Image 1 (cartoon, rainbow, N blue to C red):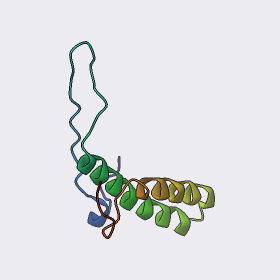
Image 2 (tube, one colour):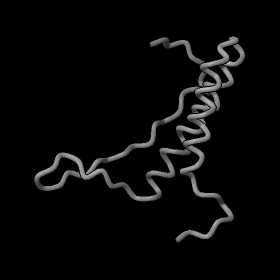
Image 3 (cartoon, rainbow, N blue to C red):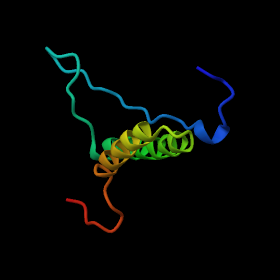
Length: 84
């Protein structure tokens, strides 16, 4: 890994704790707030990476990163939507 990355690219990664259940190592269930936080982080990072890839003429990589961004954004609740 390169340590000379711009500071704007260094963001804290949301902590996701996986609950252990009896007979299983991981339950696979997370609160909606945790899922939304992780999805939002992935959307933001994917957007930045897509911009970098596009600037370096890595068109396919930029396209795939934008697909990842769109998928992540679909898991982030909209501010004006009522929560269920």
